[in-house]
Each structure stands twice: as structure tokens, then as C-alpha cells.
Image 1: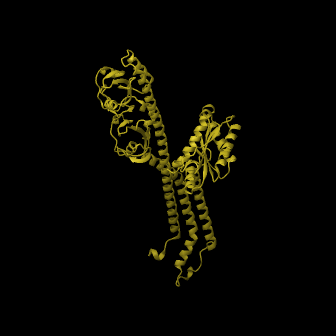
Image 2: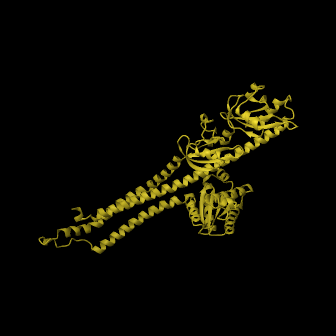
Image 3: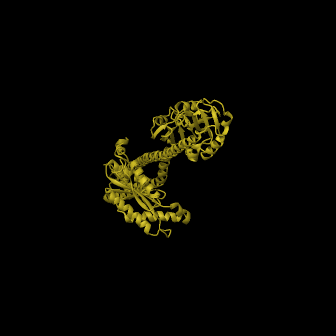
Length: 530
């Protein structure tokens, strides 16, 4: 019966509009979620990688300094191990090297000759812990695996330097200990960043997969060799990957190998943090869209009802027409059919345009920085990914306002915001319209220069720098820029390398006096193809 009568136009159109809107919202939400998840995952890996590399370089430098210091001290003390001021010399050495919890000297038979701190009580005793045996056997500069000290009965790592007399005879070694369950260099270097509020944290493993440092002190000394990231570090590799850690938690981990000691630094963030952030974006989009969509649906329902009334009257009239019902041959008083169809089309067109405007407005907000009106980081990433996928050459200019913190501290954040907007306006005015001007965050900006030679990009960067250096800003004075410039594919084979080259150039500009433009240094050919 329903098929014979057919669907009423009002219900059919309303159902079609509802399904269209629902599908559009679902697809938009899914695309926004996936895009945000991918962007946040990449950013999390990059931030964790930068952090782990920074800590790795710092730790490596500390170990190099420890070894050099022990070598110099050992050469000095090996001239006479029976000297009366031996203990004072060790005390003085430890004061200059607070990274060591204690400093000690053992002879070639493992007898403790002198020591600082708690180990003094064992002077004259033979110490045959794992670290002692390793140092006596290998007779070389050494950073030991973690072991329980025979002198203090505590889990330590030892840095040692062999001692030789003037004739080249082995005399023993000078060592410094780092107690893993007490305040040590890892806590000093990692600081509060080792365990952040979002669940991110960093830890240190030995070359055999033993935890040397962990925010949870009870886990220090635990064997975590089953963790895939730790296995990569044991193989001497650095990198980043998504991993299920030894406690069964899904993590985004970046890791760096410490060459000097063979250890590794791991910085990781729970994957759920990224997923939650992406979900919040979708919720925010829906929160903006739903009120407008509800109003839109109500308006469409009312308009269709009104516009369908004339057609409904005609349909009712037609349904009652019959040979025995001649008194119903008078048409109802309605507007002409063509006029009604025209009006329906116009009304629906206005409604769709209204919805399109709301959707485009939200899309524009998602792509631009609200303060400056420039493209945001997400849009910049899409430009770069698209150009690299098409193998289109382009240059990247990274600009950073010099001493911007001083501007905020001196003039206030409102004036600081005006300086940022002044730079954004200047970039739009000085650069070509096809250049993509973006705000990376804070006082850092990026310009993407498509299909131009690297020299043109350098000229553009210099024009911006010169303008800022010669023009009064909203502070009433000049605010200068430090700029780094790189080119794809001449300097790098992917976005990560390209950013690293440009960042390094920016770093050089900062450290060479600021208010200057520095060109990037291309990766080696082998690195470009890696």
C-alpha cells in the first residue's frame, strides 16, 4: 500500500537533507580526527626525539668529561700511590666532579687503597664485585654495567681509568661511582621533564637492557630487554616507533643511543594522550557545528512544509477526482506550479549556501592562526606533504623574533601580540601572494616558497629581515629577526631533514649575533638517500 501511494515529498526531502547533513558531519569528523591524530603523532615523535637527542648529547659529553678528568687525575696520582695526601687529593677531585657519589683507588689485586665517602670503611679490603673484576681484567678506560658495590652494597655504575707506573706496569685503577638509587647525573640532566603530567616520561637503559634511571625508583635495576625499543638501543640504533612497553602500555617512543657508554635514552608518551587530543578536536568541531545544523534542519523542515502545501493540495485534489465526484473539478486557489518550483529552488539554495558558509567558516578557523591570520602548523604540513609527494621543488624560510621574551616582559603581552601581527602583515605585503606564510608557534614563523630558486628564497628572507631591522615596530623600536633557509630537494630528501637543516641554519644565525639570514647546509648524498 505504501509503495502504491509513494512517499510524501516533504518527508522524502527532509529525510534526504537529514542523511546528507549526517553523512557530511560524520565524514568531516572522521577526516578531522585522522588528520589531527597523524599530525599530533608526528609532532609527539619529533618532540620526544629532540628531547632524547638533547639528553643523549648532554650525557655523552658528561661521560667524555668524566673519562678525561679521571685520566688526568690518574696520571697525576700514579706517580706515587703511597703519598700521604692521597685522601685529600681524592676529596678535592670529587668536589670538582660532583657527578661521582664516591671516588676510590684499587690496586691490581683488587685491594681498596683509598676512597671517599662510605667506602672508607673498606680501605685495605679486597673488593671483587662484578665491576671490579671487569676493570681489573680489561685494564682500559671503562664505563661498567650496573652492579652491587662490595664496599657500599648499593647498585652502582662505575667509571674507571687504569693506572700505570713510569715503566708501564699496571698498578690498578682510579674509579668513580654513580649510585643509581640516589641523586645522580640522570636526575640532574633529566630534571622534572622526566615525568610529565600527561604521562610522558624518560628513562635510561644500559647496553644489556638494565634500567639505570626511571621516574619510578623501584624499577631501577630491572631488566627490560624484552622491550623492542630497548632492543634497538642494544643494537646501537636511534629512532622512533610506536611500541607496547614492558607494562603493556601503548607508547609513542623516541630513543637515542649514547655512543660513549653504549647506553640509551628513551622519551615516550602514551598513545592515548594523542588519541584523546584528536577526539577533543572532533568534539569541539561538533560543538560549533551542531547548533547551526539544528537551526538549519528546523528551517529546512519549515520551508519544505510551507513549499509543499500547494503541491499537497494539488495531490489531494487529484486523489479525489473521479467520474462520480464532479463537484471537485475546481482547482484549489494556489500559486502557479512553475512559481512554486522556482521559490522552492531559491529557498533550498539559500539554505545550502548558509550551511556552506558556516562549514567554510569553521574550516577556515581550523586552517589559520587566530592571532595573525596566517596559516597554522597543520595547514603548513599539508602544503609540504603535497609538494614533496609531487616532487615539486620549494624552499623553507624559518623566522624567529630576536629577544621576543624581552618584548613581552618589557611592554606586556598585548604589545607582544601587536608585534607578531605587525610581522605577519609585513610578510604578506613584502612577499608574493603565492608564498605560504605560516605561524609555527610562539615567535616562530615559516614561509614556504614554491617553484623558486634557492637564491630567490634567500633574497626574500633578507628583504623581511632588513625591513624589520629598519622599521619601528609597535614597541616604538626595531625588533630584529634571525632567519634560517633551506631548499627541497637540494638540501634534504624529506620534511624532517628539511626542517632540521633550516633549524640548524636558524640556530647559527642566533649564535652568530642574531639579525641575520643563514643558509642551510645540505645533507650528504648518502643521508639524502637514506
